[in-house]
Image (cartoon, rainbow, N blue to C red):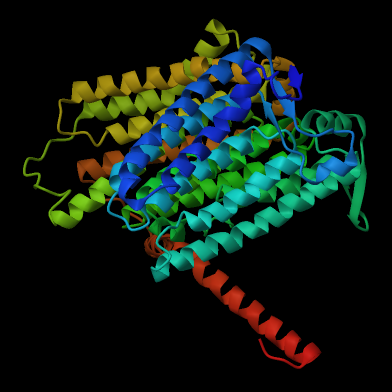
Length: 580
């Protein structure tokens, strides 16, 4: 570990990189803001230079961390309580380095896109400056030296989400920004309470020292008589609420859909960077979460529920931004679920892949919307007149590949890679995600009927090989890179281990749903009539309407807010004789 307090004239390269990388996007924001309006386009283009430099510096910083270890820089004395009001510093380890590369990459692309996309907007300079400031905040947050500094930038990021709405003259945009600002306060308050509790129990907010003391001091709390809870569980549950709000977990997810009125570059930054904060926070505190199986189980349940509800709601939306928004909610559910299963590195791998993909999709989303407004027939520019017959080869390939996949993966992992599957539920978790991901991809490929069936079958087999390689090799290597201590990784899986019958039941239920999906596809394609009870059809329609209206949670929250306002007004009138 490179631990140092920087002094003027004696700064090392690692110090300059750790401090300079976050400051460069802030420099770009200042370049855009300062100057005459007539030169704003030239200054906006010149602002690309600090972003590109930050990207290069982040790569150099990651390489240095891998070679020399964690870079720790403090502008305060950790032993002095007087300096803990705002303890500023940087702690760059492999997690921080990887996230810095992701954030600087996405930030550079989004800034460059915004230079041309927003050039006619009256708030052009303000928008570009907000992109630069948000990138600066994200980089500082992921490289924070302690919990207090992390919370400060976490809180500032919540304020930036309000400013990034940009067009606050639009009523719906202003309402969505206010809802975002309000709901994120719930998570921020819980996060702050968790930090206060951690400091009161263990006397520190330094990450490594906090993890060490929490492991050495088994503290039990009794919030309610007769109910005991461990110190790590109490702290992690409160901090997890903060992660839930920022990463749009059910039921704190309703701030994300109304925020979709902002310009599409904002959504690219939001869905590729900001919303990943929950997963990054849980990875940063992984040693603390590893001491609390109860919190990991809660995270697994919340993540699973969010993934199911997000994906189901996505399928019923008719607005491209809301469809993508609920898709992100579902993917963030997967990310939190992976953390709840102890697969912290897999969650980071997931959020990186999803972030790059969703940033690209949202940046293209604006072009699609613009073209659709110009050409009413877009994207349905033609009609398919040729009907391709059902291909038994395509269906059989997908069906048997999907069902035989667990056996193929099992043999490959146990025999070739020597992974102790029977001894580790964590290894089974990796295999389970391989199977589910491949099954979804292969099931989707059956819709490609415009080409010969053997090509689709070949694409299915290739998809299987690509997914297996990605999970068993890339994800496994990434896990070893992010968490080199294999005993530490094993301890996380052990702490998050589910009861055997429950885990087996989840696998069996998923298998059954996969088989039913293939049978339904076969019957539908072949024209066979699927006999369903009348009540089942009624339930199907009811569920569709329920998810189309987003579970009516917006209405429920609105009524709850009005009820609280009435209660506050009544109390104010009763106690002080005045009306709100």
